[in-house]
Image 1: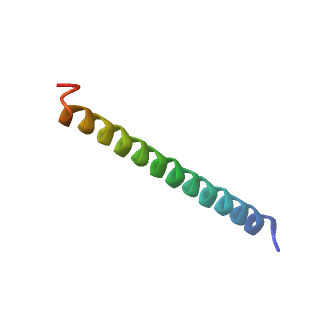
Image 2 (image 1 turned 180 degrees about the vertical axis):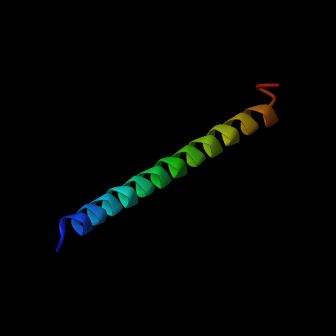
Image 3 (image 1 turned 90 degrees about the vertical axis):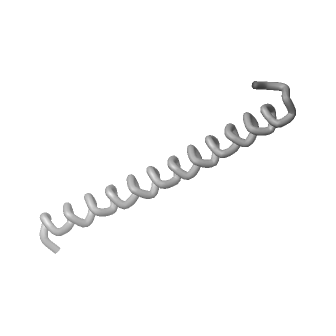
Length: 50
């Protein structure tokens, strides 16, 4: 296996790992925003806020 092909495979592995990490972070951020919105909505409906 030549050096260029090995380098390409390694950079591909790194790119894939970065993509999975970004997806995991985005999933958690969406989950956080959902829960914050739910909390605010419940507070407004219970007339504690707004």
